[in-house]
View 1 (cartoon, rainbow over the protein chains, first blue to last red):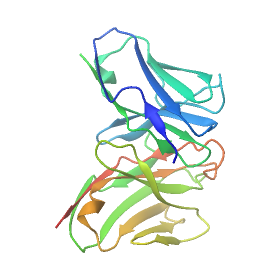
View 2: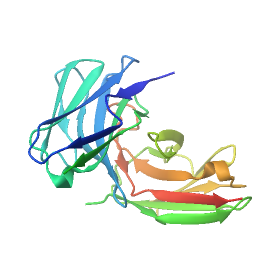
View 3: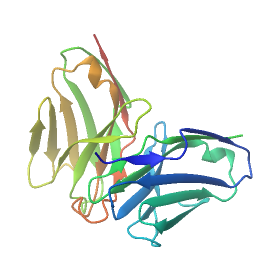
Length: 109
Length: 115
C-alpha cells in the first residue's frame, strides 16, 4: 500500500511564526503536491514538485514556499504565518493518480 | 477563478436512494476527470475516473456520466448506503492524468445517507 505521511495532524502557531509542514511518501513517486482544503472552496493547489529540487507554483502560492531535497520528502513552509492561513493542509504524491496523506489542521492565532 | 464548479454543496439521501453530484468545467483542454471520496479525518482517495472518449463508466454502485458538449460530468451512487456518507470531490486534469497528475478540484459535496 502506498503511504503518504504528514508530520502533524494538528498544529497551533502564532501569527508571524515560521511554520514547517513535512510530507513523506514511501513509493518512490516523482510528483508531490501541497493543497489547502477550505469549506466551500475544495482543494486548492499551493505548490507541486515533479523532481528533486524542482518546484512549480500552483494556484495559490502567495505566502508559501516549498523544499524538496530528497525524492521522498516535500516540505511546505509558511515564512510568516497569518490568520488567513488557518486551514487543512493536504500532501499528495503520484506517478499519475494522486495518493493523499491524512492532512494537517493548522490553526494560526 | 474556479475552473471546475461542483453542486450541490451538501446532499441528504435515504438509504437505498440514488445520490447525484454534478460538476461543470470550463477548460476544454481537460481530458481526465476523477472523483475522490474523503471520510472525516482522512485524506481524499480516488473513487472512479473517466476520460472524454467514453460517455459513461461504471464501477459497482458508482457511475460517472460524461457530457463533452455540455462540459459536464456527474457521479451517481446507486443504492446509497450510510457507509457512503463522506465528502466527494470532482476534479479535472489536462495532461491525461498521466504526467504531472496536476488536478483542479471542485468545491466538494458533503453526502449524508440516512439509514
